[in-house]
Amino acid sequence: MKAKVYRVRNIPGQADSEAARALIADSLDGLAVDHVLLWSLASATIAIPGENLPRKIATVTFKKTPTIFDEQTGKSEWRLSSIYPLVLDSHFHGITPLNDVDPIDHEYE
Image (cartoon, rainbow, N blue to C red):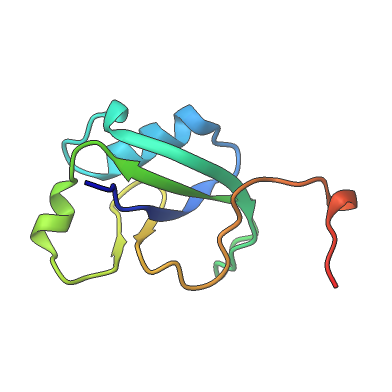
């Protein structure tokens, strides 16, 4: 069976991979850190009224299905209770950066 991929937005900008996994696990009741598989973590510009703090976006899968999915079926976005207002989604609307690139190396046409 394929694992479903989710996006987690609004991760604090100073978080590394381990801190991001711990924050996500803590935000999902009863989920162990080792059940969070982090596939990407990148800086993102997220507009939050009254704040101008750096944030990150991650893509994750789970070894164990978080209970929030069972409790709230039919949804594609969840606001997680945490010290940071994390947003977990499966719809991937908008841009999802997968890694950080040096600004000088960015190219577009």
